[in-house]
Length: 180
Image (cartoon, rainbow, N blue to C red):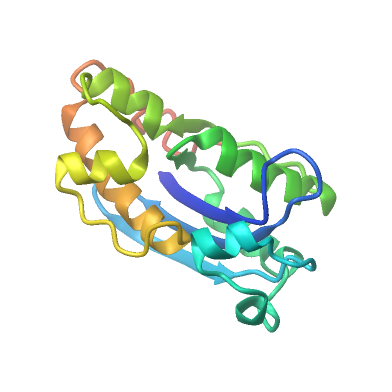
């Protein structure tokens, strides 16, 4: 199993920045089998730059759940799955930070679609999600929103799986079909 994840935040991983949106698509290696999406109330003002980039405003998240409200859902949907994201250290780092603040340990195997793309489909001038999707004709609706970016990353991930003749992407086998 894989979980393709994207988050939107109030800033960088370091420091007090918080999540404002999360989208997760659980994938069995063939297709999406489950999904989770939510705006999140960060409990602090969203900086103007972030509001401009994502379109997520303080008003949009004022009645949204906090991360604490959805943490158990995030734990459940990612359980036993490889955590996949475009620039995985950012998305995983943010969720891990939020989980740690709540007293949860959060460890998952990770796979970065930026690094994997560079190896499996080399030669692109940019591996940013927007430019790579444009070059590969992958539809990207709702750029800089968790659901749109995660949905595009699902399509990129499926393309990478088809191009992975060298076994870069871990595949479930009878021995590891329940990854931890």
